[in-house]
Length: 73
Image (cartoon, rainbow, N blue to C red; front, side, top):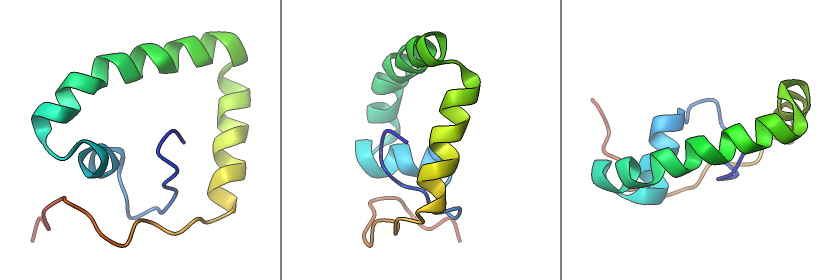
């Protein structure tokens, strides 16, 4: 939800690479993102986070047109 990408073709790893360009950028930000998630989970509960995700996913926002990630094929 943080990166506003709700296309099922975009895995969380692809989203992170898109926003942080390379593996090292992702590794730097990942601990912080995890701690932010834990804070949100503790403050709002899993059910509320899941409901927010479902609502935002239902809006079917388009995925970014361009990405820095490499095609695995």
